[in-house]
Image 1 (cartoon, chains in turn blue, green):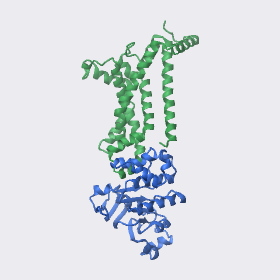
Image 2 (tube, rainbow over the protein chains, first blue to last red; image 1 turned 30 degrees about the vertical axis):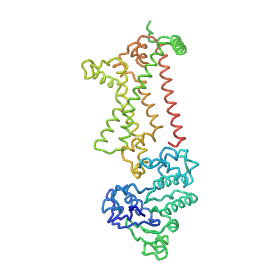
Image 3 (cartoon, rainbow over the protein chains, first blue to last red; image 1 turned 120 degrees about the vertical axis):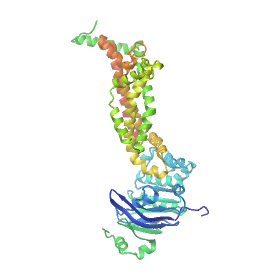
Image 4 (tube, rainbow over the protein chains, first blue to last red; image 1 turned 60 degrees about the vertical axis):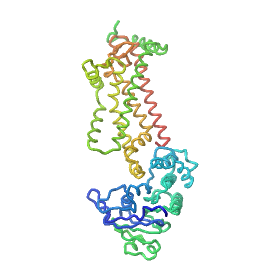
Length: 235
Length: 242
């Protein structure tokens, strides 16, 4: 990339506590440009909190998150899609246009983004009347239209049926193929295998292992990783 | 001839038919009173909305010291007795009051001000409730988009438009039905500041039941119409997923 990028993203001694409970502790992690990083681990391990800390929605109570560029620049070059898509009470097109207008970008990019996720025909419909899968595709189009360098996805298919999951995964692959760094949580091992170039295993608020996907799946680098791959409960 | 307590059902029946006659014939005096009522209350709602809705949205979104106290105060002011609102505006506008020089006391403008004061807290408190629920849902996503408080407020006002219309209708219902505030600051001057509620109070005490009943029927029709409209809006909003 000619323009200096926001990556690598470094988490240094990252910790987060709420109400006296430590949810994330001592996380050191470096995310570089490249293929999708899948953050996996059992429910309640702190995957979603880690993602929110990296995206800046939560303020760390220990350590820090550092981008390669100043934070205010980095903020504008990242987007996030949530498990339950937040649909504004507007049309599909107006939803896709909203963040573009907010950022002073050309709202016409929304049209192309809807085209790419196959929602052009529904552009005029109220977004909240779409099916769950369609809503998640709209959320992806909305993020994609911004042309982010980094896209955080928090369990984007957790409440979707297999057909909708397949469509969402295809879109995630297309976004990654265009050079956006995808950082995604999932508790679905099959999904992690399908999408991951890199795997981060989070167990009990800590990064247990982080590394290239083929190595992780073929030679699990830790006892917890092996147990998780076997389907054992980790706590 | 004043109607005496215990006047027969026949008198009441006569009064009713006279009242319907007044309504159906489009009686001038009746039309003038109804027209002024609508003009005063609609203007008051418009002015109160300009202050109340953005304030409600701001309270839904922003976290600042004193916010909780402001919310409690607004909720308390929802129950402000109309005569007290009238009294406050009376004191402000009376000849010796701070705005006495404007000569607004006993004018429709004074009535608008009093009703606006009465319903602005209602609009603010109700819109705060409605928009805070919406903000719970939107907050993370809007922060992810990089929207600060000043972008979030107009976003909530627009996205809550259907629910806020029902809030406005509630405010209009309250304004058009109140009698205390407009009586105190308007003075119930015939042909100038007489509105439906003050006319009903006066005509009833004078014993002119047909006019009082005719006005009562119109007022009831307006209140029912407003509620039907609010219900229709809620259904439209549900169909649009709002």
